[in-house]
Length: 89
Image (cartoon, rainbow, N blue to C red):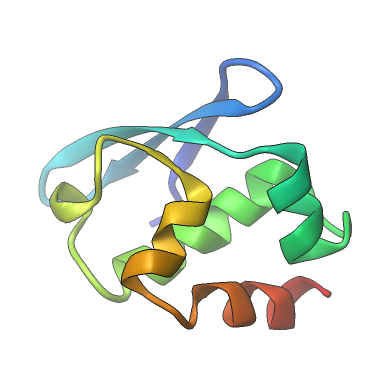
């Protein structure tokens, strides 16, 4: 299922995932990190969709932090940066 992404401001988004239990996550995505991963080829929302697909393939939605900056994913899943760049660059 596709996460529902709500833009709060230029860098802050709420991402709602409906699985067995619904969860909502506040995610910070800076312009610099967005460009670094996508070269500006897709919107921030599309990057967040793919980031959540990446996460949901590795853990359940209720295990994902409630609030985080997108770049923290790399600390837990080192392949994240490379995988996102390969999808969008």
